[in-house]
Image 1 (spheres, helix red, strand yellow):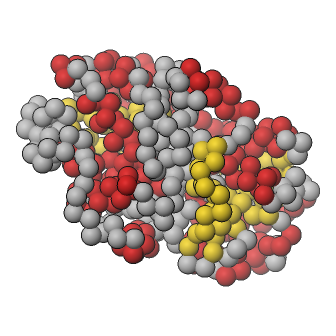
Image 2 (cartoon, rainbow, N blue to C red):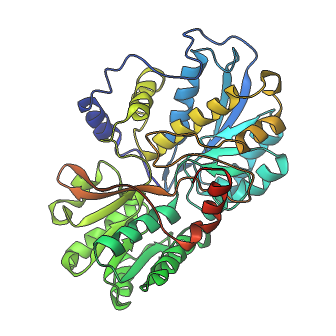
Image 3 (cartoon, rainbow, N blue to C red):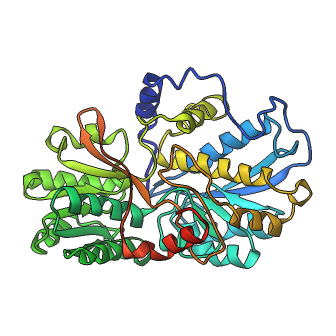
Length: 417
């Protein structure tokens, strides 16, 4: 999960130092260099922008990629008409956005969605309408355990498992206190998976839950300490996570525990925000390639934003995921019979047929499949917060958990293993 747009300027500086800002060439769809002029293909997207944060970077990057595609031949000469709605983190607004885009508009697919709210509210709507959602910023169970939503980002459950696995294997963790939000399909769901993982390896884990409306970080820390844990997993959005770290610093708890976190703390503003006290002592899981990896697709994403996005579009994890969802969607559409591009059912079938798409931004292949669950991204990186940035301490590794048994079975069925 990502909150706000605090890393925009810092990420832009890093990308400039890596030489991506000067790139003139982009790779988008058919790459014809000619603008698409045919009948538009309507695609939708929903993001959340209000308290607790702005998740629009997913749809921002998807929109930039679609503009690039439209400038380079579109989908067999047809441009993508990308229509985006803000759910304002409001269930009623989320339902209205889906009604507009899915029920009242001949939208063939949803791409780049990013929200806590809309996934829970609209999962049944998408299934009933027979429309597929290629999401990019998922954070709740409905996004991963329903048939019509698939995301390029991992969400809290895999990212927490990746952090827990690293701590168990490299830091000697035996008992992890998972400090999560007291939300059934977010903190409770993902902390339970950590407990199942640790117990499968002879250890243990305790869930410590925080009220998101009135987070009491000091009480959470006391409860974590009382659990007998040797490792504290801060399964929180960045703002609350920083408050927990500040409270721990005030009590000088750094050296008494291992400190780990999922992707929300992979933000280029974090090293300065946590300060010298935490440098070298805080480990963060990254569900997509860290910016310094800078492979061909990472460079293309940055170049697309430079040429077809806005200067303030975030260069962050959700932006990466939005770009990937859009790129994979376009790839699937270009593989379709052009006569079926307006047929929602045919597009949904094509999306379900995606298998073995790859990118240097992801550690493994992207696929969908015809299943009641979708979580193609369950491998990532482990980073250590250091002065001025993040040090990669473990490159791409797959997370080992009982939770992934059905996903591994599906991947085997699709010939991806």
